[in-house]
Image (cartoon, rainbow, N blue to C red; front, side):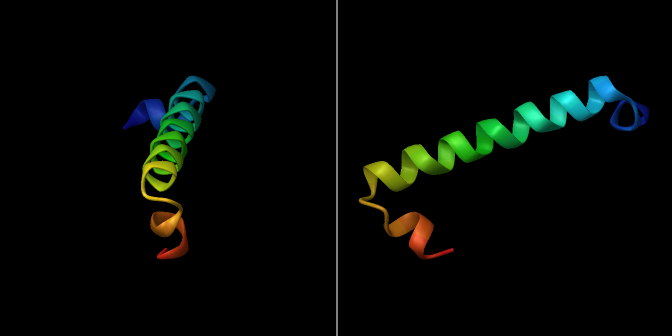
Length: 39
């Protein structure tokens, strides 16, 4: 958990969040946008 406190850890988190958003967008695109509108 110490890695979360340093800039490198924050970068990893940012990349992970970006990946999650990318996956969410892919799902919503395949689902015709219903996925995002249901959040």
